Image (cartoon, rainbow, N blue to C red; front, side):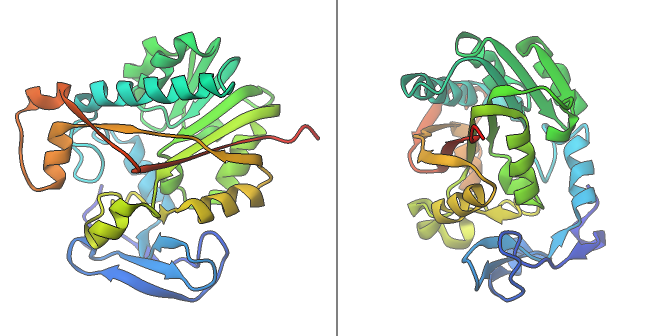
Length: 286
């Protein structure tokens, strides 16, 4: 991605309610030249200024996004053990609640770790991602993969469950994104959205140092009220919170604290509660 100093920036209205007013929460320092604003109308925190959407989509498609990117993942594969453990626990929760089964679409599947873990939970597993390199890694883990976003899935294919895990915080048009996910569901199908919890104790305690103020990738910072409002606006019914315990590789945690651990420690994980907000709802039958 081009350096922050050479990027064309834009200053959006609130992406959730369109309000033109807002107050700056964080700017300068590690945020420069970007800033985090809070909407006066609905309370959403969002990135402003921010890069243009086409710039970020090109970044996500780049060969280095999942490995070696200064704005992305230093080494996504090193998190495999922790991510698989996280997904196994999430899938177990979904089964316990009667939310597993049938066909699954994961939008933003990365290396396909969730799709692989979902073999025993869903009869058909389809994924999308903007990175062709990531999809090459994911290929053995899915029945079908599509290069791009949710719009890359052929029209007319309907799924029993659609998941977007740690994706919505990257989206510039959240209402369009959620409605596109709903369009891929059969009537009565389940939609699961997970995102860093901007209402968590972690964010309150860490303030500007909260790791999920990951600029310029994350452009939305959603708490439960904001995510609920968004999903209800788009017609998602019967929303309920889903527990989402998250395991993190020890070297990743150390890096957030400015420390460095040997790469071999990546097989060791630490479970951190309350980092992720997950809501599940249904596409209405009519």
